[in-house]
Length: 334
Image (cartoon, rainbow, N blue to C red; front, side):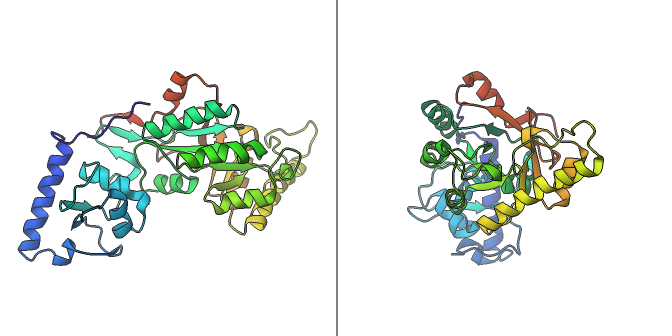
């Protein structure tokens, strides 16, 4: 999980960006680009997909510029990556990307994949804290399932070092210990809940689940009981099995949406396994994507109803943990 800073002095990308900025400045002076490209104070809208040329103010940061022009401070990484810079001194010309510039995570040297971590529970608090600190130090950004799907559909892009952190539990220790650790490092996470377990002994209440939702964590579905949906009991009629799968998913999704007053769009297959019927049922009931348990790559062209999550815990070998966090598959795409 080495954190490799962007180099400034001889970066080929920076040289290209400098030439583009210079070229755009010439166009502005010649009247071929509107002068407003220099000084827009707010988001100019999405009508133009051309980069916007602006001048940084004193005290500006990539986050503040992203807030001003992209309406989202969390997109400061786009300013950094697109311009090949890390800090601003004020007064320099900056290009604002008004459209995805790396759709699908495609680069001449390969393509991006997104690791998805699956924790059964918080485990050892100190070890979990160490893992999250390592992710932060290595420059990772924790994303949501919605951001992952936007990435897969080419409607948005992700930081090169993106990770989706998920939990398959409604345990009280996750709420009391795990969530504060995530907050400390500015990470979000997805909690897949089995609704019948909420409010039980040692489990979170619906009020706590709703609080997580309001704090920006994604609450997603893991069925009612969390039982496997691929196991058909001996002698069970297909119609009975079909209805049991439908009931398990429909009632759980309905409970989540009722308590949170928000759509529930994501499913973790209980026990991590699926079959054609379960996947088809998930799509039929309105889930946008579903996750399996097991190692595998998640590029933009992955199956949305078979997104891989890798099981991890707080005691995983650091070397293996680092290998799981691979985010680029090398390939000659020229």
